[in-house]
Image (cartoon, rainbow, N blue to C red; front, side):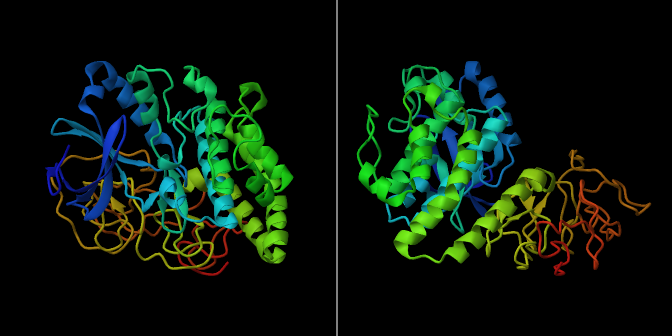
Length: 430
């Protein structure tokens, strides 16, 4: 166990956040970037030569998942003999939030976020194996992000015991050592049951379980059917994966909102408008989210945004500083956007020069364009850069969005009028 104020590489331990059967989790301060992070450190006896390759493989799998509701890995490395997995620090977990009263609208929003995250993982052929409230981290704006991707699967291979997973949310077939996509669906169904009823069913899962009367009062019969199908003991009667469950949830959601409005006196036009906004944003994420790396949420409207954007394209709020984590190794002290270790200048704002440690040139698949300055030694640019990170030359080319021919009338950069109300690059109203 690490101690408070102990240094671990560039991290200074501040406090222990929790521990489980697999790892200890600490809050730490990155002394170089000046931000707080979460460090997950597996117990040493689980990190053996036999399992190290499994850890590496699963970390690579987790690093490839790019979704607004999946927590990305910042780093994974050995530091002073400890295998350290670094992620952004959330405000708490869904398990913590469930200790307080949850409104119907918030529960419905949380359910949609969780389903979207797991559905994306299933699209990429990844079974989480440990879906539970503790693995959904809460960020500003009631934004949930699923964590422990891949890591849970390594734990399953390592801990030789029946019933891997978390008791209370584990599917029956997973307890028998046969997990599938439907196992994650079962766990999601139990979380939804608990959110809307306030109680978690116990094994054996006979219907109706405890808390059913309250669940029936709060949910429209169609949404109740979604939850019931997800928690079927017979795996063949469940949704095959979270994508199927998300589609069924989307069909039932409008009726569930109207049902709740009739019970709690909420205004119907307002919920209809919110539904349309949610559908539009979901479609944007599906078509362009990965291309534009829109992994973050606007602090004002919660619309999906990407790191280079200087304005929220949904509500127009200025984004002079990036207030979320980054996949780059360091932050610009001026705009807080990410930088690579060999950059001399911030490519996103007119930031000051930085002292480069060493002469190593770091490659990146995102380098897809060239600097126009003939004297520039690197001449490599990433999309939507405003300045060359090596020679500080202002980028005069216009950046386009693949798959769209639309351009902003002011800055001539690519926009998506079917989704956005503002240009995210110059803030002009579209």
